[in-house]
Length: 95
Image (tube, rainbow, N blue to C red):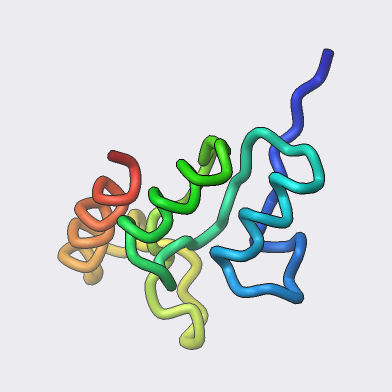
């Protein structure tokens, strides 16, 4: 039986990020994925995931300056420190 995760970056966009978790749980999902959860604190995200019983199945590291056209930092040699900082930030959300 397939198991699907709601992509809350593109679904339930009428609500703010944390409320999208409630919507996903109410729609019957057991897992979510999020392109960029960094608009809320890791603690707030973890608390809402726990409250809804959802698993965060996937999220991306920070993509850099989105408005300047960056869509990731790993291949940009002049952005190594920003990439390293993004990995550290991502680890905060993963744990």
